Length: 225
Ligand SMILES: [Zn+2]
Image (cartoon, rainbow, N blue to C red; front, side, top):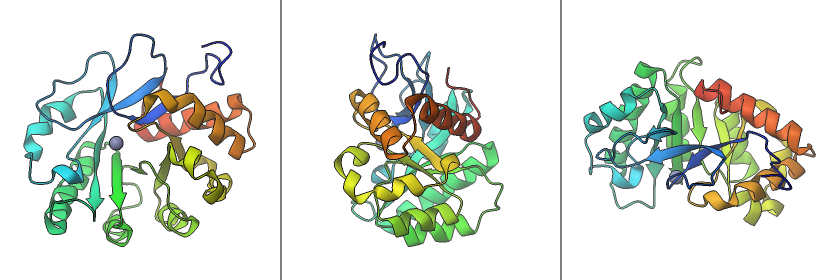
């Protein structure tokens, strides 16, 4: 990757969909949404019931995936007001995954759309030393960002930084130990997201890479090398 913003640095992508391509040298936490998929080999992943799939799968079917040492997080899971699944059912499925996260000591990767008050209420019931909550693909207002940060959440930023940079100037104010970056559905955008995020923080690529990597290692208890 010489000549790119990454320049050979190991920077983790905290949430990605798809599967590793042959030339993909970025460390990614791949998302597994279907429990009938075998645990991906040679890569690390998160697994869980997406709020759009509430009622579609039994959480017990995910146990073999959760058991894998390559499963670094439960999720993506959460709440979504735009989903066809009824909110009470989504709540039930999400709460079961919160319990799974606590029981297994694995952090949560969270998808939340227009349900932040509900999310904060659930978070407030947990001990401060419960596994981390990573709000994936965050792109809300500064107020929302800081409500989540105050509640102890980590924010993972993706393509929203490229599209909405003007509305996300607060990105520079987020505590450095609460930031991750991710590509979600667009793994090919990793270098652009990384470069934009580093520039918004006024950090060199090496400094920003070190920050993201340290956060990933602490939250997911795995060194992304
Ligand atoms: Zn996703």
